[in-house]
Image (tube, rainbow, N blue to C red; front, side, top):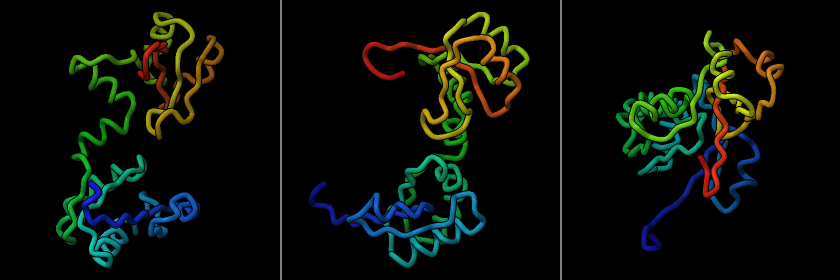
Length: 173
């Protein structure tokens, strides 16, 4: 790796990126949800003669996956991003668990908070359990639910899932 001629360029819609990534060339971009984002990437890739583009922020990966064919056609860059269907599954924590279950992998039992069977799920699993956003970055906004009052406050939310809490001794689940 040390023999590669690599120049890292960091783009972020957050102004703190210049401080966070000091030592790298950084510049501000529109947010990934902006209608200007795709054109910005194409212009930036072409202006800097970027050979490989690797999106690393959850909030931008799906946008880039959807735009990859157009970006690829309008630049000479290789985009290292998954196909939109796979990225969409990974972006939705409930769909990720369903994928894991359907393909024989270990997964935490999960249900959407707005599923009519959510209260039955809670009764079957018991407490404590986990409530977290279906979409979002990592474990942000993850809460341990300890009682039925906390469940009742969150039932019906289309943006939330309930999961069994799994305690793991050697690692992360």
